[in-house]
Image (cartoon, rainbow, N blue to C red; front, side, top):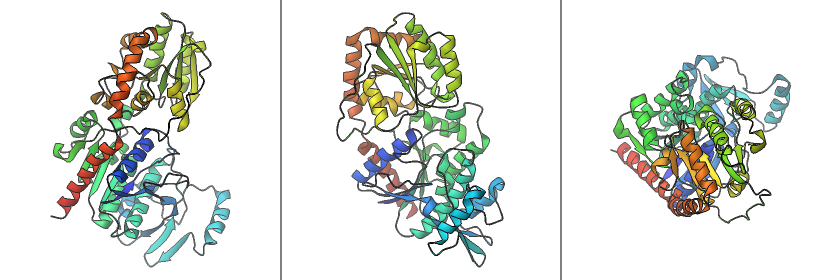
Length: 438
């Protein structure tokens, strides 16, 4: 089985759980005999390619045509705000253009070359989540169509991750005729509540309607897909995420303090419930003083949370680390006595599994997909800060309780391997490929 996979990020350069999931998944697929070519907007060259071939969209010359829609070109036309009729190279400041053009043309090519009603052009993707995100999503579709042409006959199925790559998947399907599987890691309702971005919602729905199968990371997400997007139930299958164990265990870092450490690790945004974590912390500190609370992450609620911590008078017990990735995440878990994920809406949530892997007892919201696969985690409603505070207090005050949850949790999470999840994904591939051949 050969898969052409479109993603937005891949370790070591990640902004959240999507890249982590893609890495574990591709390793698991390799273990199951699946060859994956992973396309991303901008690869840095230091990605782990032992189990997957990583292809940077920034290195692909895309064919753009005026006369008729070819793969991703019609997608460009439908998004009028980014359709530019001049031969501009996106995302390069005027002062950088001359230098970029000179370096590019040293290869013997021009930035663009006219070929009848078409021209070839190379886009310089940032691969970030910035102001030009919608433009990059649309242009990525054009490049995806070209990638599908270039790799004709070299893949059996297309797999696109999250809304950022759905247009790319659709374009590749139109060019190649191969079946498309889309993976829903988080819906717009998870990110924004009821105040959704209708453009993002539209892309999500278009991607799932065009797909031959939709993979949801939890039954919670599957229900949202069916109820809120109108996708037929028989088209949506749940495959829970998993966790990857380190190839070798690192030495635990020196803590330096005798206090218990309670950690929140994730984006500091509405979806992740950081404000509930702060309120629960204040309640715990009224009962037991020797506890420190760590908020590891960044996001648009950072300033709000800092101000709330100051108003509650617990700033001396609170630490903000900023965004952590790679080995720093693992070290943070090793330093923690309790991990908490109070998400308002969490399609899955890999971080509790990573914490349990490090022998840390966890508290998770009932509004998370990972709650479907865990028995040895304390589950509370995200809004119930009293129950949250009680759970934290129980773990820091009673060592036997903490030790039992850590031990049983490690045993439980050991069975949640990417190899097993990948085997289920492979069966989805086989189903859509067989259907396409009928």
